[in-house]
Image (tube, rainbow, N blue to C red; front, top):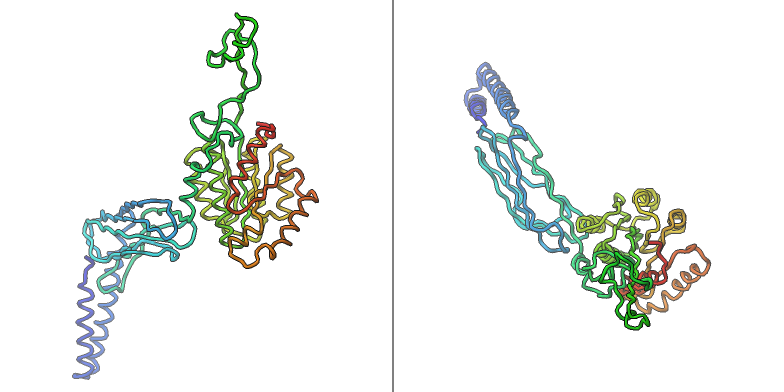
Length: 430
């Protein structure tokens, strides 16, 4: 441990100084003890600082285990942190995990004591009351002397990311919602219940060498007047197209939570169908996720939605929108969820027209919002607001955008029905 000889000499000189000042007030003796006291203090500080300088962050190894990265609000996530000291010096230190103030801590996230080539283990739980992405760590190590006059602080180890969402369970269970194969507008894996058939049926023609046996139309063969003629069904295989979600939320938190859930459920729906999904959403730092597919992309989408919030300024959102749009294939889908401003919407419309994207606006009715907020006389209060929105639609502001309006509880089902309708009408270039 840090040497205490200097401080022992300092303590003794202080006692002698006080004794001589009270009992033996002899000036030369008092001056002598003053000199010894300050000299011993200076010596102790120099000695301990030299000792502390030999300790570096490389002497510590941090191992952290998190029970679950994604969790519901107020559900506890267990964090186990082990700090291993590999140095040769014996030290007295305080070890503490860095935890955001927004998280509620259950347990002890700090430790203090003497380390001598040993390890410290801390196990505690954290919970959050608000949707967001939180970071635990790095570990703060404060090495000091036993008197606390000299110390050295270090940050060691990496951070652990925790994602809290109130609707994460309902988003992950989105695939258990409507089991209608034709809801997807393109083909993905034939084993996926949402993707429908691998290929779309076109017509029936005569058999040619090289055709697959499984495509033989036995009904057409039976009805044919030529007994020796075989007919096969001809299919057109559809290609994948990208889906870009633009979340333009609401300042009403309960409404915003519902829009976040809808965006997550639809994202999972299209990812399960084998599509590439991208996301742009407002937040403290605007969320912009490039198009991709698979489970890893879904986790990125959920992480981005956890940070999403209503931002009044749209300049940053417009700038970030260009990044995923540059990576989205032509003839894809752009789905705006919420209430986009006129300038923001015009930018999206111009982009869709330039790259032949199919644009959608998915927005809830005002009456369903009032019902969600449990407002009195909701229909009377919001009838005027609904009328203004309908008038805006008739004025042709959206320039070819497909507008889907539905109640808060039926947003994703309505969007899926529109996608199915557009598919059968060949509304998608893919």
